[in-house]
Amino acid sequence: MASAPQPNLPLFYKDLMPLNSRDHASWKSRPLETAPWLAHQHAVPLTTDEFLQAQRNFPIVFSSGDNPLPLALMGLNEGVNTFVSEEGKIDEPIYIPAYIRRYPFMLAKLSKDGEELSLCFDPTCESIGDFEDGHPLFDAEQNPASTTTDILQFCERFEESGARTKAFVEELQKHELLMDGEISISENENPDKPFIYRGFQMISQEKLHEVRGDVLRTWNQNGILALINAHLFSLDLMRSIFARQVQQGTGPKMDAQLPN
Image (cartoon, rainbow, N blue to C red; front, side, top):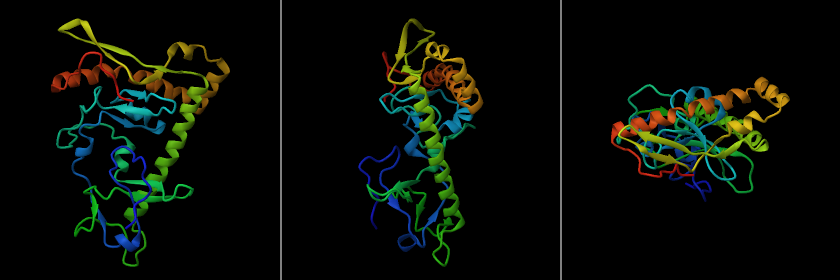
């Protein structure tokens, strides 16, 4: 079975293989009861379609570099996820980003020069395989079963959301709204020795105040302003995530940075 080209695999994915009825006719998919691959991941990609839901639980920031993407912070330090246990369980009602729910599937190009996207999966994931139980991926005639159709539609919607997210970030860059972020958080016991977090980007409120009124009216009409506000409001949760780390014994080190 040939794998898809994978010079740089996305976050979580250890391998990628195209799903097809010839090699996977008897394969099934079953729900993941745990997600150990998420236990030590502090930041997860987020689409703009999810901002309003995600900002209730997570700070939303942007990655550093020339091609920033939104991230939901589940922890403030490398290797720390304050919502997921070591076993990969989430024991509280929080919003689960679509990037997590998509795994182990995704749409990918099977050739560098091709434009068509094919449904692929990570064969190392325990939720898909030649099991006796589970939801069949293909029917008796080797046509995609309803499970596969639903997965494909979800992945297609995710790609569409990704395109809208890219357009949103490009609009922010066009108006030079993104700046290097920095946040200082102090523990009650050591108020004079704050922890400094860097290594991410955020929207500059100063630059936002300089945006022309006609642009702001357009953003208010097309929803961009609501996304900006969701991001800015969510930053207050940085301190909540910090407090969770302290409570869980995974507190930060001095002069901490959020990895790019």
